[in-house]
Image 1 (tube, rainbow, N blue to C red):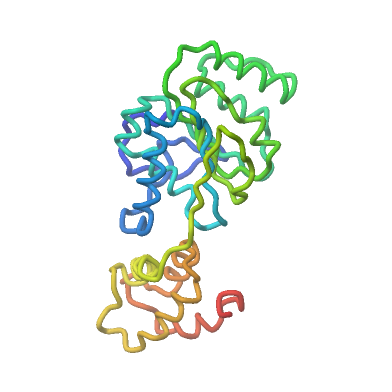
Image 2 (image 1 turned 30 degrees about the horizontal axis):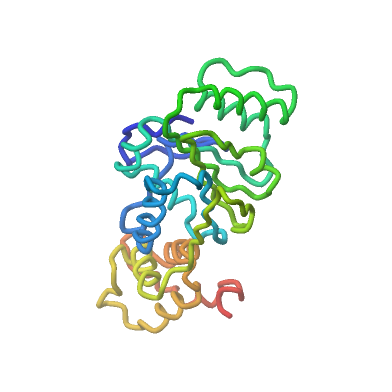
Length: 262
């Protein structure tokens, strides 16, 4: 994992559980439909000179709602990169993390230099916090992606001058303190859901003229319930390499799990 720096947004594939931020995939801008407002709102909170009291921002929402896409897009934003310089760090926590390994990653990327031997998670927390407090004050941003449990969050929260943390989690109520703000990412509205689905199915922003049964298309979009991951996966599964809907699209729709056809 490396600091964000000034890398281009066209990146290589993901590598390992702790992604290098410069290797995180940014989707085609057309796939970011519906995220413009959330990106602007979260960005304004991060860059606000008036908000000195909140060092932690929680980005909450169910799986597949594009929490990671949101925060990576923010880290890629030129204004955010200019504000934090080379001090943007990204760590994926996951459901069952090796906490000492996570602390080693944070040490390498934030503190720098040789990583000390941590005797325990408590020792790692003490050593990392001690070094962070002793570092020259400057604006730093740490993203903790996919945090599942409060205990992990408590171990990885650093209240240091100039240090802000963004946490993505399915549990929006994971932490509620005076130092935290919560931003809940919602489902897409009908218009944005259709645009995202059409992009993955037809490679364009509307239903092509050659589609005879537009109703089945709209029905599939409706059954996805505004969940971006469902719209992307199902849309792609109904498409052909040329961007035309498969002749078996309706059969595929009927074969979807009942949860998608409720």
